[in-house]
Image 1: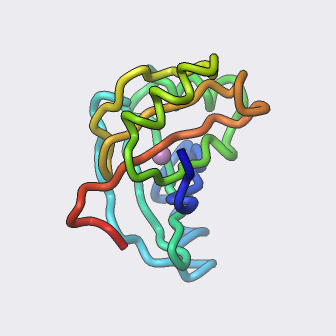
Image 2: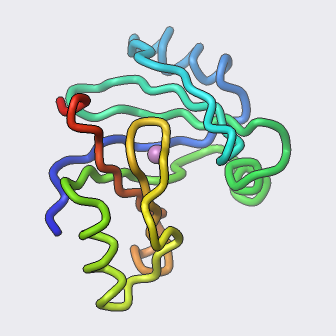
Length: 138
Ligand code: CO
């Protein structure tokens, strides 16, 4: 596998509107998309910066992985997402050499098929892989 680019850098926030008051209104970034991913219990906002995005993650209520992250560690860097061409092949290769995968199979995310690699294998940083649909390539 060979990651193509950093797709996004995700930051966990307690309240999306107040986070946007900084990232949109102070830094001047534009909000490209806001989406709810019910399965992950989050609302996400994508703010493009060049060919990468900042992804702000707000928990939907006090359950789910982002809510637990905020409780344990407070607001801050949540994960880095790398784009790959073939996510199934990437997961197969990584799994075969003993990398700890949170998702053994790709699953639908806000912007394509995604899977997470456990921070135990990636020096403490949660890593996400994404494969974009053909018609969403940048
Ligand atoms: Co992400």
